[in-house]
Length: 404
View 1 (tube, helix red, strand yellow):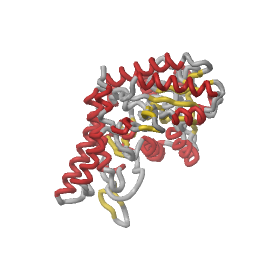
View 2 (cartoon, one colour):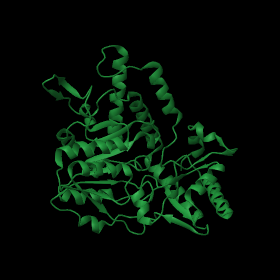
View 3 (tube, helix red, strand yellow):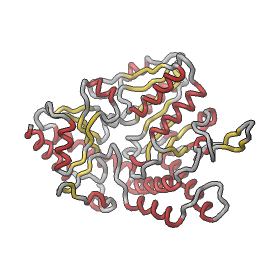
View 4 (tube, helix red, strand yellow):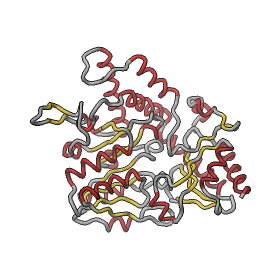
């Protein structure tokens, strides 16, 4: 059992009042709140260590460089990558996927080649491949889902042919909460010698990720989803793929030598980190990973699953409620509608009661089209949420429902 009340003391924002009500923050799928230790680490960097890294000979630059590279090793350890140079710092999941779509696409894809994605993907794992489709004439193959919101694995197995060059799917759905069988997805793809990218944005804060055990070729996530700062993210890639891919951007840091005749690119990981990196963000991300590790991802997953089941049981008693995403293996995300009440109206009225949820299509419009709806109300839980908050939430949904 987690000491949730003690944990909540690390997150001062949870003490806020919204319209005179205690804030209940159930929008963790969009972004998590930040513990004091992360905020203090950022302040410490700016107050005592601020200097551009890697190229400075003075003490501040050397100190900041060391902290940045130690942060890289912290990420390596957190996801059990084989090498620290397989960790590329980006601005987030979106940039990480765009990097792979561009660089892998340039190196390995040609007209008529195929990339497999799924019906439930976030726009960040759809649009970059469509841009590649427009640029190079590749084809997208879409894994269907069943009525529970689970991938049709039989259909997936039959999608492979000699033109299949990459699979790119999410670990956990940001809408449905479905925990996809990524180990099996990767195993099947590898029997066809096809590499796999896993979008871990919704998984990284909720379950233990071991990229070597998964045998993932690429794994991506954002710092702000795991209690770290905005604007920092990670692309893990196997060394063999990263070495074979061209740079995504050009500029400082990603070069070994430059002349007007020829530029020689830097070694990994710097080949993919053009310009001044977010060295404050990387250090703060490392602090967030340390914080989560101290609580224990196994403990977090067990507690959040308990919250999920508790909330589902309570909400299911509300007349006319419809759930989207009822997979057997599901993360702490609930998407729902009540009768014909518009999701935006429900979200606005819950906000007046101090409850923060997400409404809309959740950057998954093709998934909404699959269900024949415009959007849903989404509640997503964290280890700092409580059953008491869920009780208040359920009563609030009932109250709003009765208004209509």
